[in-house]
Length: 117
Image: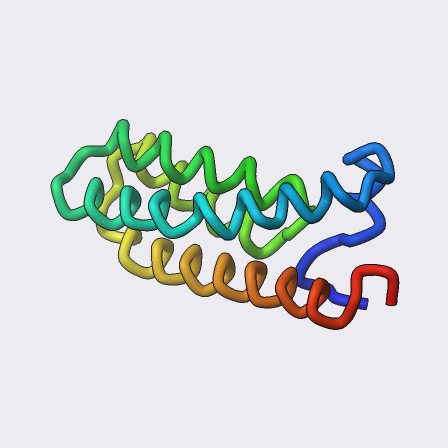
């Protein structure tokens, strides 16, 4: 089983509703690109409150799936934004992007392989 996300735990949190799990995965896939764009642009514009909000939202989306790497990465971006520490942000944002790409790809693989299998 995947260590990128916790299928059993997230399914349980979603009331053992596989349709809801699929809908939440689609929501992540649909919302993550715009939120990552917001992370990038707010960082470039020095808009720490917007950066903090976007990373917090991504953290919540990833937490739905028990995706530890993505949650940790989003939390780090959120922490740096809150503390107005720009020096570590490029690396933290890169880690956030990679971890979300990995999560979205793993969820897509789950559905291509068949959610029951």
